[in-house]
Amino acid sequence: MTKSLLARQAPLADTAYQLTVLTQAEAAGAQLPAFAHRLRESGLLPLQPTKLGVMQINVGKMCNQVCKHCHVDAGPDRTEIMTRETMQLCLDALAQTAIPVVDLTGGAPEMNPDFRWLVEQISALGRQIIVRCNLTIIVANPKYHDLPAFFARHRVRVVSSLPHFAAGRTDAQRGDGVFGRSIRALKMLNEVGYGVEGSGLTLDLVYNPAGAFMPGSQVGLEREFKQRLGREHGVVFNNLLTITNLPVSRFLEYLLESGNYESYMQKLVAAYNPVAAANVMCRSTLSIGWDGQLYDCDFNQMLELPVASPVRHIRDFHETTLAGRAIVINQHCYGCTAGAGSSCGGTTT
Image (tube, rainbow, N blue to C red):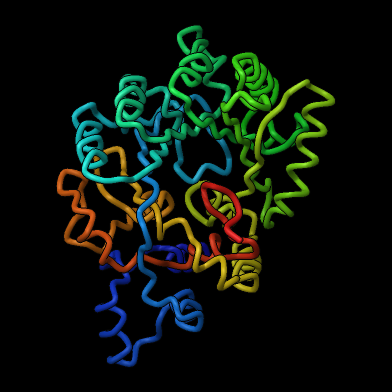
C-alpha cells in the first residue's frame, strides 16, 4: 500500500512534464496525470511563467528545529549549505534583472555562515528582502540575539511560522518549548519596531494546519491570532498567511503512516480552484537550491524536479530562456490550487 502511494507521488523518470512530453504521451494514447487534466479544463495547460517577481533562494537545509510538517526535511544534522561562490552567482543573476523581491529560506537561513553577507549584498542592489525566520533561532544562541536589529537595518520583511496561538498546538507540531521561545523572539522583533503600526517594518506569521485538513479562512484566522497574541502575550504583527500543507517529505510520511493520504488528496482534488491555479506562485517565482540548481518552486525543489529548460543552474541564468519554459507539475500541485489557493505569500484568491 505504502509503496504504491509513494509511486504515485514520485516524479516521472524524465522528471519533467514538458509540453513536448505531454504531446507525445497523448499521441501514444497515454493517460495524462490528473492535475494536467484539470489544468487543461481550465485552459492553463501547459502552465507557463508570467512576469518573474520573486527569486527564492534556499541557502541550506540546516535548522535548529525538526518540525513535523517540514517539507524541506530540515534539521541540525543536515549539511547541505550554499557557498558564498553560489551566492555570488545568484547576485550576478539578480543584477541582470529587475526582479523586485528576494526570498531567503532554509532550513534556518540565518545558520548559513554567509547569510548576513548575502543580505547586505541584496540590500545594496535595492531589492526587497524576505527572510523565512523560524523565530526560535533568534533566542537559540547569543550570536543570533542581534538579528532583529540587523533585519531592521536592512528593512527585511520577516515571515515566521507560528502554527497556533496556543502553546500546546504549536509545540505538538514544532517541538517542546517552541511556542515560548517563539513568543520571546516575537517580543524582541516588536521591540525594534517589527509589526508596529507606522514603523514600516513588516512581520508576518504563517499558519499551517496541524493535521490532514486544509486551513480555514485567512481573514478569520488573522483576526483571532491578533486578538489572542495581543491580549495574552502583548505581541503584534502585520499579516497572517495561511499555507496548505503539501504531500511532500515529512508531511507525506505523516499522511502515509496515519492512513490519511487518500482522503487528504481527495480533499485537495475536490477543492481545485481554477482561479487559484491561474495565480500559483510558480508562475512568478524562480526557486534556487542550495547548490544553485533551478526549480519552479520550493516544493519541486524538495522533490528534485528541476526546471524544464536548457538553463538548469544559476550560473547559466538567462531570463528570456527561462520565461519560455513549461512549469513542471505533479499531483502535489493540487495543494497550491485548492480552495483559496496557497503560496509562500498565503492565499492566492
